Length: 140
Image (tube, rainbow, N blue to C red; front, side, top):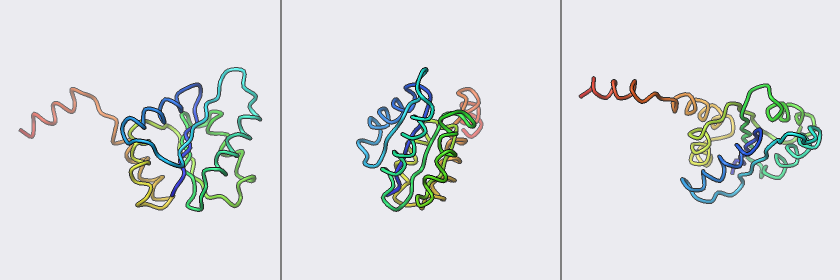
C-alpha cells in the first residue's frame, strides 16, 4: 500500500491527518510531521527521511507539503540521495480534498498515477459558492 506523509509548517499536517480520520476512518501507513519555529532544520530533514523510509512498504510514498519551495517541501529534495532505493513523489500545495482522495484511491493506482490524480483533485476541489450556484441555476 502506498504510504502517505503530510509535511507542513506548524500543526497543519497534523490537523489534516487527524481530521481525515473523521471522514475516512483510521488508515494505516499515514503519518505527518510539522516544522515549528525554533526547530533545527537539519533534524527536521533527517526526520522526514526516516518517516519516508518507515512508510515505504514497497509501493512507494506520496509526500504532501504545504508550500512549494518552503522547508517542508525542500526536505523531500534533501532526501533524494538518502532515499535512492525508495520510490516517492513530493506534491506541494496540499488541500483537504487531495488528502482524502489519496487515502481513497491509493489501493487502485500506482504511485505516479496517484500523484497526478490528487493534483487534479486539488485543482478541481477549489470552488466559489456563488459561481457554483450560478452554474446549477443555469442547468435547471
